[in-house]
Image (cartoon, rainbow, N blue to C red; front, top):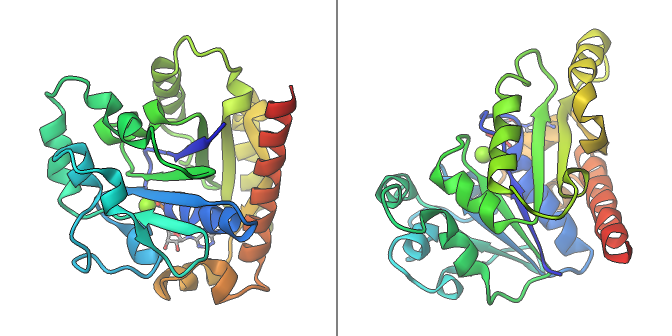
Length: 258
Ligand SMILES: Nc1ncnc2c1ncn2[C@@H]1O[C@H](COP(=O)(O)OP(=O)(O)O)[C@@H](O)[C@H]1O
Ligand SMILES: [Mg+2]
């Protein structure tokens, strides 16, 4: 089954975009055909893959509001096997326009039906509004990046409630379709790390074993507008995101053989 992965957290700056780009690029490097959908009006995934807003005619809001075919918005990236549906600041107004509409939550799901990719990764904006609900509705795997810092778990219960609400009644066990990814882990901050892991105890079955360490190269790669694998292949960021793709592919394999 095609996997559609929503990368969500209503908090900003937790590593959603960094994860979307490098996880999608990591899967593409393994030979899978991957589509990254930028569902944030800030267009950080679009820019992070080297594509400047204004250099393309159509973006994701044209699909959600103007009924354009998603296929007509797809751009090739410099990464082999990785395509992109770009975003644009106009997506912000599109979300407001969408809010009173019928079937507003299922627009993206409908648009994705006939696409031929192994994996679709959706980078969400930092809210739990209509766009994020569209991503949740369309997805069959949810990846929640969680920054290792004092306030990172504020709002976490709301996030889980929203996921449960949208996915209500689905047969799949929660542990199989949602995973929390710890990001910006500074191994020197052992007291903070222990405290956060304690807070996460109720969710311990949902944690990825892989953790993404704090790594300046990830920051620099984003500025250089390329994935970590081409920017600095020997960095801890490249190592961690490679490990994440392996763990994820293993999970997919397990759920298919069960
Ligand atoms: N593991 C990391 N180590 C160092 N910097 C990181 C790491 N992950 C993300 N960043 C940086 O933190 C900032 C916020 O990350 P980003 O992925 O844009 O978060 P979000 O999409 O959740 O708002 C960016 O400047 C990014 O380069
Ligand atoms: Mg982002």
